[in-house]
Length: 494
Ligand code: GAP
Figure 1 (spheres, rainbow, N blue to C red):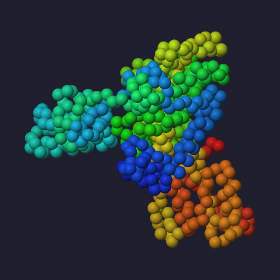
Figure 2: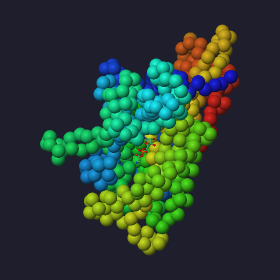
Figure 3: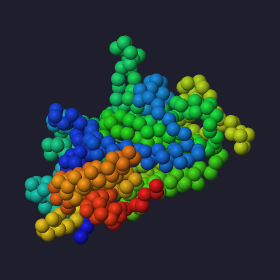
């Protein structure tokens, strides 16, 4: 029987496996860790690189209409003024003065507790799938403690950005359970600042990029001038991004240092942008399926028109069933000509392009598919994580943990086992095969322990192929080759 762990425990189990087998470690762990930062160990770095390489191959190298770019992390600070990040890239936050904990105001929910028309207190809860249940239980406790008779009115949770000044002192802090310590919501800047050069004053302030996209806009002109592109075309970039997230959480889902894979796809202002947007959404879904995510775990969240930023025509987020619930994995936005126009205005450089086909000159509009590497990696781990029961070498049924990675992204592609490590002919043959495969793939050689246990160790890290060199291999030229296609969710395309 094969089963997924319950979603409650699934994140914990994935975090545990990642640490135990060397995928992901908390950053600076010997100093107690550093919230919102993670390090990728030997298997994690392979998985991460495979995801990035698969994306680059499919989105850049296999397409005639997309060019690659690698721009710097620190760029001229005026770029962030033009893009609107200096003034507008912030989240509403609320502090608990007593515990010193900080919450994102839109992730902190509260409600009045009303009994027979009278407000007898407030409940608060940090956003989670069970928030309604938790709030209702807390409200029932308040009613019981107050010994109030009458009907408890339904608990209607609102996020803290909707709180009124007179409520600030009444809503309890989720940390202490007591009212009076929460501040009003305040805007908290998400860009990390640094200083560049020998001056220590404000003129030296620069920013660690919070998205790779602006590096693309800043280089758009350079790439147009190389003469390699014609409308419609895209520029793709993979690279680090930094955000001083108020509440980094859910493992690598929301961290302070992460990596993005972004495309700005430049189109004519008169193009059928709706059709192109749809095409990009489908391309993105197909790609996620090609790296092993189950199609049924991916859904679309279309942003309502009245919630769109003023420059945005449409945004659809591709959502994935993460262990902590359905959350954004990939944003596909139609941003019009906002960014290029802003850079044209602030830099004084023309951002127009001459379109040979229509003989028109214009500033193009963009469609922006923007995906996080770390979030993709967490999605891949979530989809791959499986537990089943199999008999061990002694015939006793044991629980086994498997990662069912697509071979396209599996960190180790194959493991090679000589059946017995004290038989030189088996070891030699296994070593020769290992060396040969190693020229092209990341493969693993393991001669120690019972063969079942060696397979088990590879199952746990998601190695799709196991090759055992036994006496048949020597005599008949056949080796025991155990591919695990039954474990694979997607057939590799190459
Ligand atoms: N240029 C557009 C942009 O950056 P975004 O929705 O803020 O849009 C795009 O980010 C993607 O980057 C998200 O869908 C997510 O996959 C990833 N991402 C954003 N913030 C992140 C964080 N703090 N930690 C990990 N990944 C993040």
